[in-house]
Length: 124
Ligand SMILES: [Zn+2]
Ligand SMILES: [Zn+2]
Image 1 (cartoon, rainbow, N blue to C red):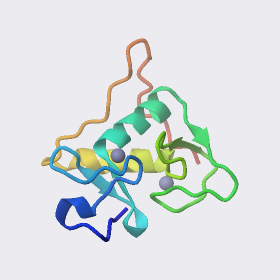
Image 2: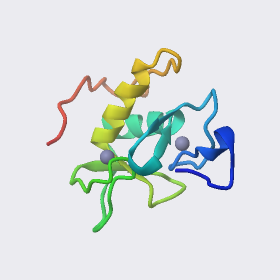
Image 3: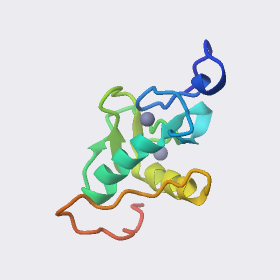
């Protein structure tokens, strides 16, 4: 999301934690200026991909990034419950962030005790 009252890096806020963009906090952009930062993406990836967790959308809710209403699992921001990211956007954003050598982000490894899920096929 954007903060119209701010300039520079402070203008760009992660929709999920509302912290501003910085060198240490790269972001991936979705539709309509929506943004997810590396930290939130890591949390969402661990929750949805490794732990097979997440939330299903409530009636009328759409993914903050792709604006689509999908019946698959979402990760919901613990701070702003209207901010949700679908599994597909988590995977796409992870791929996009990993491709940028300046960012140097890597998708998080499975937590201890969790079997690596590998690349599970996308849910339809
Ligand atoms: Zn964030
Ligand atoms: Zn999405």
